[in-house]
Image 1: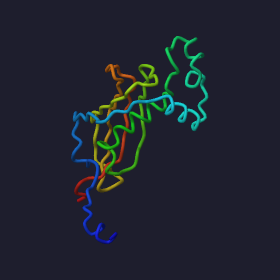
Image 2: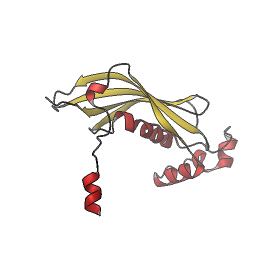
Image 3: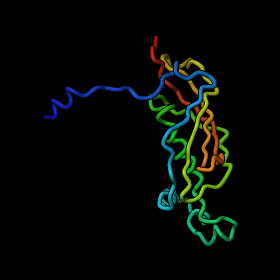
Length: 162
C-alpha cells in the first residue's frame, strides 16, 4: 500500500527563485494570523521575556493599555513567518534583518497580515547558482494600521544555476 502511494506522489517544488524577484515586485502574503492570549503567554514564557506588560493585565492597564500587550518579538516572528511561503520557502540561507521598527502595540485578538516588496537583488559572488534578495516587509493589524516593518535578506536559489 505505501509503495503505491509513493509511486503516485508528485514532487512539487516550493517557493520562488532568484529570477522571480524583480525590484518593486510586491507580495501580499495570504492567510493572516490572529494572535491570542495563549500564543502570547506561551511565547513570552518560552523566551523568558517576563516584562509585565506582556503577562499582567492590571499592570498593562495602569500603563495606558486596554489589555496585555502582545510580545513584540512574537509580532515579529508572526509577520516574518507569514512571508516565508512567498519569499524564502525555496531554500537558501537567511542573512539577517535590519531596520526593524515596531509602530503600534498589538493586543490579544488582533489579526496580523503582511506584505513584502523586493527592494534589492544581486547575484552572489561566493555562492554560484544563488542570488541575494532583500525585501521590505510590513505587518498590519485588522484595521490596516502598520504595526511593524523591517528589511530581511536571504540567499535564494536560481532556477538555472548555469
